[in-house]
Every structure is written in structure tokens, then in C-alpha cells.
Image (cartoon, rainbow, N blue to C red; front, side):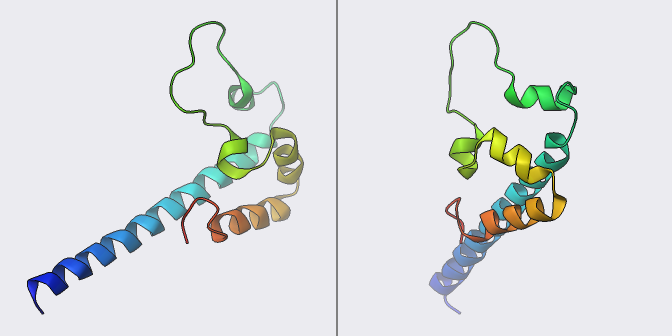
Length: 102
């Protein structure tokens, strides 16, 4: 193999590995959300999902569910009540390349 072939192979492996890591981390993040959405609304973990600080300026990109998964909080809460439906939703979301990962 030439040096150019080795470089192409390394680039290919890096790209594939990056996709696998990103996909698995997104799947883990969405699966973490399932038990939190089923918690009592007064639980601290559940409260932090929708909490917004008072005052101050907003900096940086928004990181909300509508932008990340195209789903609102009410629908996510309804889906999370049934574990099988939530699991299917997460698998479908990660499998469709919604995040630009195919």
C-alpha cells in the first residue's frame, strides 16, 4: 500500500468511528431522558429539564428538544410513559439519520 492509500484508509476509519461514537452517545442521551420524564414533576432531575434562570443574557446556541429531535416536551412525556414506545422512538430517531449521521 502506498502512503496515499494509508491516508485514505485512516480517514475512512476515523470518519466511521466518529459516526459510531456520535450515534451511540445520542442514543444514550435520549435513553437517559426516559426515566427522568417518568419522574414526579417535583423531582429535581425533572425540574432541571424545563428550568430557566431569571435575568441575565442568553449566550450560545439553544439546546432544546425541539431543535435536537423535533419533539416538544408534552409529546416526549407522553411517549416516555410507555417504555416500549419510547425505546422504539429513540431507535427510529437515531436510525433515520435525523442528526446528519447515516
